[in-house]
Amino acid sequence: MTLSGTIIREATDADWSQIWPIVRDVVAAGDTYAYPADLDSESAGGLWLERPPGQTVVAVDDDGTVLGTAKMGPNRPGPGDHVGTASFMVAQAGRERGVGRALGEYVVQWHRENGYRAIQFNAVVESNTAAVRLWKSLGFEVIGTVPEAFRHPRDGYVGLHVMHLRLDA
Image (cartoon, rainbow, N blue to C red; front, side, top):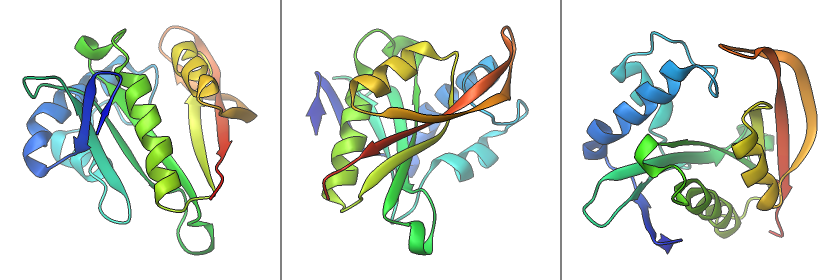
């Protein structure tokens, strides 16, 4: 699928060598994900590479360079599996190029096509204003904020937003 000039496709195990540096760098920055700073490649792969019914995708440029990645699937198992969730990471080289928006549009479309009734983001760091602005532009609402739930390396304790998008299933 192509959105905003970026090719989005399902990730394969072979893509991990390009996905891992993105995950490593985003986690090391410590300002958007509550993952442990000492996360290694093997553990990160277990967290990031979704298996069915979920999916992990990559956003690639014309030469196949991975510029970003997203994972998606049910937010909860069993009676909560009609609400989806997703996580996103964009490489430095993909920022300001529409990669995050393309991944966000893909995720919304994927959830609709797979019969989900809504998407819930469980922990959007409130100081990540670019992400909050993007998700709001795609129709998500902040339905609550857990105060001081994230220890930001520069901003101190900041809130984590719970964001929600109702889908017409």
